[in-house]
Image 1 (cartoon, rainbow, N blue to C red):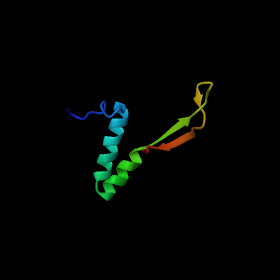
Image 2: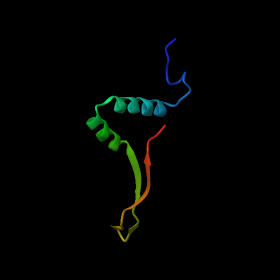
Image 3: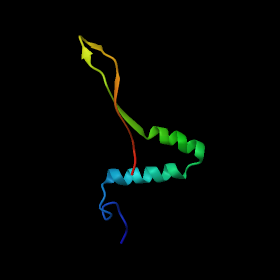
Image 4: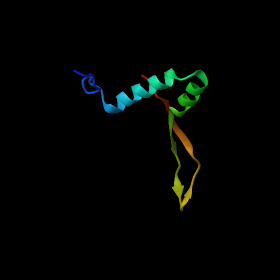
Length: 66
């Protein structure tokens, strides 16, 4: 029987995150640092008034972990 993400009891999204982390960890140091920067996520918010965008505010910064 083949091992799949379903048989492991995880979601496909979690499976892809694990695979991506494994690939990033296999890279050479310089390339790995560049790839890890792309892994950072954040949320920005801007209030619009009268058709104009206000200042962008960083709401939350999260780095993928697990």
